[in-house]
Image (tube, rainbow, N blue to C red; front, side, top):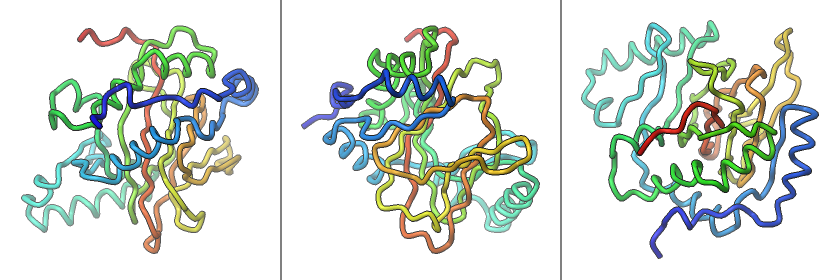
Length: 248
């Protein structure tokens, strides 16, 4: 069966009013079983299948850069080793990130990998159903679109603590659609929220078919995945935004 935007369906039993109340009170909410089981299994198969992942990191000026596997392979070993060493040294100072990504919006707009079913996810997160969920849960009626990228964290991958403000303050809330089965807390990859003292106020284990939505005011981090982790932390992540939608 062909995968189209109609493949993706929200669980019709979701009580969005309940989750909206939690979000209004706390600014963070988790919604389990957000997709129907067939939709979740299809997404899981795409994320764990033949997806042309790129390595996402920050350069020496703390700007995000990503590399295809071919680009990394073509890079001289000395240059590649120096780049990874620099990534880790800057992470020690709470700067940067390092993990696999597939930038859904950029790929869609630039026509990368034509015909790949991942592009239907890009269409889904900008569909009336997904944007409607975002508006209903956050209470922000002016949400116009959603950013999205697929992520995969393997051993050594991390995301240092930061705020999701956006360049033009266009982000209204962040979301993480977790697609990770059978994860253990000792494996790292935990989504942690921090207070002004840098103490952990709460943390979440990577889970399967669970949507986490949180206010951009919260400082957060994804802890480094341990060397002995027995899997890959996969998700679709992004932001609900209120800037004008892209004309296509």
